[in-house]
Image 1: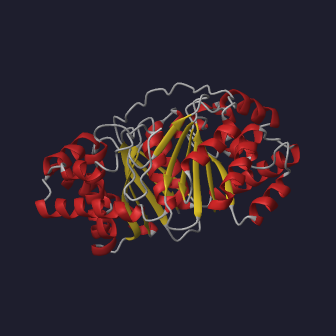
Image 2 (image 1 turned 90 degrees about the horizontal axis):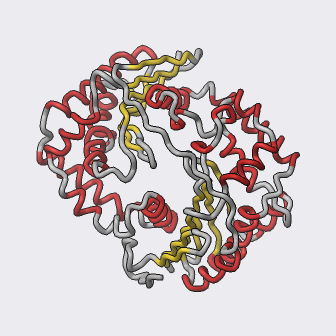
Image 3 (image 1 turned 60 degrees about the horizontal axis):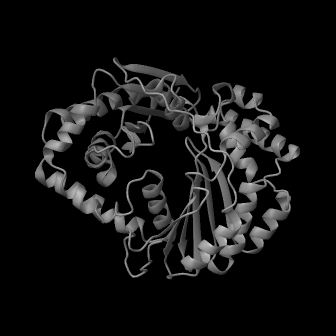
Length: 423
């Protein structure tokens, strides 16, 4: 177990306490005594990639149902006790994880950890709660069909990933959620939810040794079953792939245009992020925002985005435009991609971009929530607990040639996915 030094503003190996329990659960604790609160952020290695295709949405439904009552507390009683403490506990499903988020007064952290342990170890899976949650999910999925932005992103992922698990919606589809039964939920929990490889991050006005003692008492003898499903490779597009989802009676069309990217731990991650911030994030949306939104006045919003997971993520641009401006906006986004591929960026533009990235990091770490998210990211993707300490050095090392190389390597102008949702 490493020591903790709360005087250092950027979390690192010397200030993050790390303990691995015998069951394979990792604990990370960072002291922040600025305010008397505690933030808990956790992840277990069970997600939508582990569910059968025909039961898409099962992992997310299981995660939500784990929050809806235990053998010791019914859902209403659980909520009353947590709310009486002025605290919050949330469970949600992701692609590779069941995620936990909680906040509370630091004096109540043991109680909240106790409730979380109950939800992890003893979910009651009450039939009435299952039916209620399933109907709520189906209602949200029905409403989703009218959301141009969400439908554009879902369609983009299907174009990029094809039959890969990453193509699927984490929440599922109406037809797949309808198929899910309570025995399916119980089976997913029994076969996939466990401690091994999972993590709990606690940040706040806490005593690390006391927290570890509490978690050991609550969870060290909990095993569960973790059976990750192997992730298949992704086939990159060899030609442009486009789809328009018709959503009538909307005043806005949403566009997502982009390419297959890289896993979060890929060595190209930092230069790719720098290239994207310059292309689509800096200021009011980088070059994309400056051209499509500011200069041409085509978009309500326009920006670039890089995401990554254990498998390849995407590099994309997204914009919300009036339906009559879709073609011109797409043409402009592709033109800015072409410019990034063909022309070296100026030294000044690159330096401004680097300074923006480096300067935004301390801002993200101003709150316990931000610190917890950063530590969770470093731990989950095995980036090293010194990742943030070395961030400035890595960003400063990105050259003009690196930015151009990222564009040439990943922005294939003859093989991109384009999803449009709107009238």
